[in-house]
Length: 507
Ligand code: UTP
Image (tube, rainbow, N blue to C red; front, side):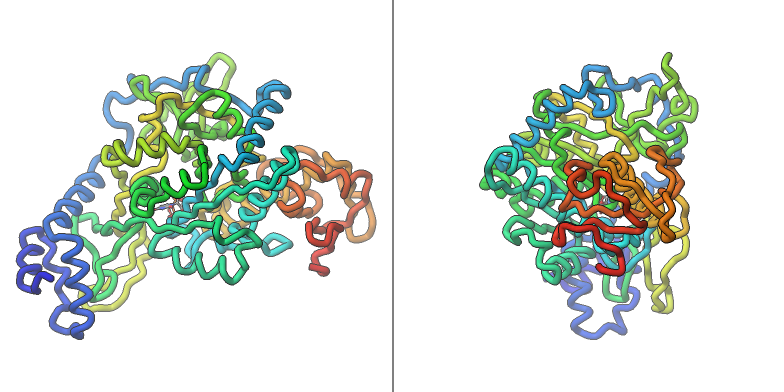
């Protein structure tokens, strides 16, 4: 291993000598750990990384010059819609999706390496409870959706099938996630079909282009973005594992969307039917200012253009029918063929351009005190999972209904947008709608009928609280047997194992 003087000389050249500020007071073990980390980062490469990050961050925000002229919306032949499609088409896609699932050709891949700094809890986001009557975590909801979709596909095709679950974690989330799954007996999934792997980390950088000390003997590192997926897949032979299992199609999704429909047969079937190698679910943007990326074309090539890169005029453009021209909001729910993932991992990954993410990075100050900043103080360079769309030979987008499929948990309680309350409300509103459709009626605590409001305002609580286990229903199917004509007192939970309506106090 390189000696301290050698590393110091390298750091000096790279303008990063401050990383050895506390050297004199470090115990031998800590000195060795710091030297090992710095040697692995390579001082010259570290310096170049810091310079790139600071330069990228210093670029003025807003649309790059001339971008507007290079943009077009996706052409209609690249766009499908679950909302607008004829029911026969939906049935065909669903049938195709279930057929692929039943043949063990579909896997789901969860992006769960993020640090969730905005939510601000000290554990992985998947372990978060948004306050449902059942107290389920995001991970549990997802595990149960996998079990249900396997069951539905199996029933249709008279077989037993598996949807393996790949979970990309990072240094922050791997150990607690693994422990959590073990403690919960993998939510009754076979542990052999739950594959955790870890993404790489890159140094966090100040706005002045300096690497940050997170402890006196440790450089602050951050996961390399959800687009780190492709390197991580190569690092951990995930493509080989997919191939060994005979998986052809992978549904990639984010941990924080409480409504995520894992291995959605309609989406899978649509993509397979169209012969797509890469697909993205989109929702109609709520308004031009909504801060989500837009799926469109840049110079004729499919891309996600970030909200901040669209000029306000472009974002507000409307077509003849009044809808936003750039209204296809990306919800981070993607379809990839294994062959496409293979090509990306082998050929295109190095071409992915890192993006600047400005975040709060804990650090040690000059005196050696640990500081948890209240405002963003650092740059993390992140690759994005969707930046591979440009390499697809046959890209398709699939429009879905926001209230059924998208409610991300990003912010801490009380933010009023994308927070635990909005996520909880979105799920309970969905289950309330399903229950009404299945013929249930709700009563209040005194036995008086509650109003039946099939369409709720987005920020309104449903009149009755109703939670349905994903083990009972994946997307509203099969509920009549439990709910048709029933008068149910709010709140209630419909749980699988008991196969009866439970009151929260019974659970
Ligand atoms: P976000 O961009 O919302 O980031 O991630 P985050 O880290 O979860 O939260 P903040 O920004 O710090 O508050 C979107 C999805 O991408 C995953 C996240 O776990 C989430 O599912 N992700 C993000 C990764 O898997 N790795 C990363 O390096 C970053």
